[in-house]
Length: 304
Image 1 (cartoon, rainbow, N blue to C red):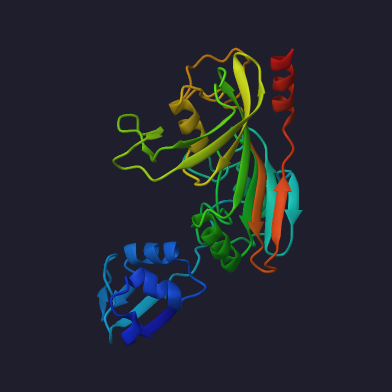
Image 2: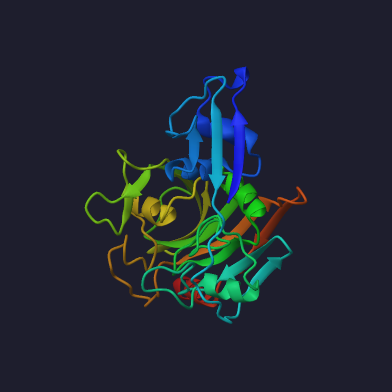
């Protein structure tokens, strides 16, 4: 277990302990430090720190960073569509129907199983034993570009970019109905549905801020092809936001009407563009995942 120790100087007085530590521990993100505080791995003057504690001059702060646990997930030789790879990270084009990380009932045939085999176990461990390398995720039936980290330092940097909303993410979607406006912005905090806990919803009481920009690419009368740009990355954000304005994604059996005349396997949603600053080189990189075959065929059917 790695430990960090600090005595608070005069200029640190009045600073929240997580913010103070984020300025001192450059290789630990503030969100990760908040998790350590929650897990009672941060102490102030020998006592577990509270999340809202404000540092005082002379405080002795100790941070304990647990070692990454051995993974309980087994590697599987599953073919990957790799858009980019270097010694720090890789960008993959996730296929439809593949779960990103293992969970109860899905311990095999996930993207994590595949990248464990491909990277020979060299993945970041920040997100725990079931989500190695995973900085962000997309739904099982959403396709497209996904970022995987091979070490913790790279992971922390990209997690900070994600938190600062500086990672570029553009999606392609087909929604039900004919959108009136050529473009628009949907704002509404997203949280757990108050009744159905398996769903997300616009939740003004307990939700987190969420912003989605959309732009019409093509109209088909009973459906509309759109590009969605995310400012935030909440669970099911595009699906919830588009449904909230009366235009759920085609094939979305959770947030739509349940009707599926095109016999789709889940929502018509594709993470097409992913752009970020490379943590090691400082250069901006952008990748585009081509539309999957089912999506292209669906566009042809709608246009005919």
